[in-house]
Length: 246
Ligand code: NAP
Image (tube, rainbow, N blue to C red; front, side, top):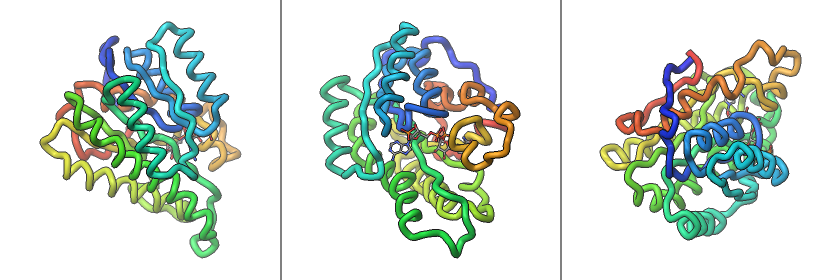
């Protein structure tokens, strides 16, 4: 496991946007960031799931979060620009973005990948975080230190048979991270990626239906690297492809 212990109030007064915050790893990251003092903006597709996370955060006494319901599949550049305006008006700042939401669709041989499915994966996993980051960069540049985290995968670092469009999207994600990280090098913005590794979530159980989820790490167990990259301990870390699990 990535070795890092986060100070209790490390994210005090930070505003952090988490995509796919209603379920799985994104839900846990939102809870963990809030637990460490952050005001978390919960972005996702299914409002009921976001509301449940909102309630968990407020019931725990953490800073009051906000909800942005948005389907990354249909979202437009204007949606992201409006979102940036809303964040600026409501919070006056943005200190971090965790690009976590992704889709897997079906695993299949390369020559059977359907074009529509490939387009959907590239839209949600690559183009949405690309345009969202463009829209949010002015806010990220305006704060003292900010952190952008992209979510990769083992198959985004070494291709694997039948992981087709998803693997290709994760290689693109790593390329986006490296390209932007190089551009912002030496500025107040840092950009890195995380490969969560096998983690007990719905996405994992869809990919490996026969697997016993109890043999996997939980989202809570992989949080150290997510906290590290949002905390000031990682201010000098830029352009790194990190692993949540060793
Ligand atoms: P998950 O349980 O399927 O959760 C994905 C989240 O993304 C959900 O909250 C989902 O919202 C949201 N989402 C999906 N499509 C969306 C859309 N069009 N618009 C807005 N939100 C959308 O997945 P996970 O396992 O936590 O995965 C989180 C990240 O880790 C992903 O980037 C994944 O590729 C990566 N990853 C996971 C593993 C693993 O073993 N779990 C391994 C390697 C990489 P709804 O629930 O509302 O659909």
